[in-house]
Figure 1: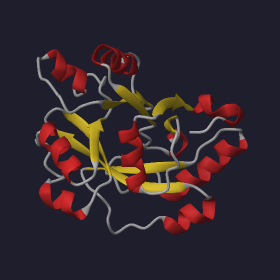
Figure 2: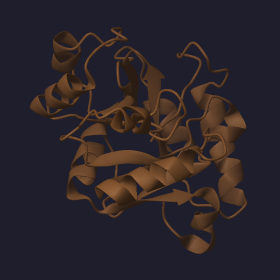
Figure 3: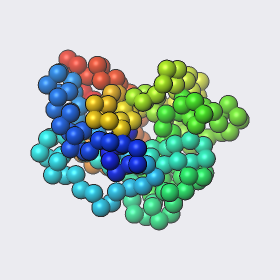
Figure 4: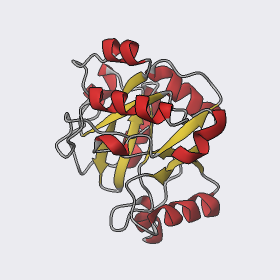
Length: 215
């Protein structure tokens, strides 16, 4: 649900390296069905990973991670119309406007790593900001420092928020560190949006997928 390839300015991993590493994880007994590439401040309409996805039997979907004045937000179900309505490169956008625009275009935007020190949503909630449209946040983030996922958990518990898991991978071996286990079958970007709206999912760590568990 949260990964970056070389298309992002701070990642050194290619999509092919990710899907190859997933084969290694599967041989170790883990269940990893697919990934969502959430490149920074952009959406790669021009990139098609279907051949790689088919070759390695890994669902490869695309989303975005956008900077806002209230932290980073993950966007799923991105459409051309949404990118025309919202400037994905605007690092000072109002995240409330982003969330509303996303829903208007059948997409969904939610806070990434809300417990991150300095830029996570918890910082802004503590300052008195309110986010009525937030019902889901990234509870497990594979790139978080000690204490940050705990802060995200506290936010979820205190505000009755649902949580997803995302590896926030920038290096090949970091993919699938944590994931989201959906009840629904996910095959395309719109499936992610629909599955999030059903609220039938939970964040999981990689080791939670051993012994045939699905993620």
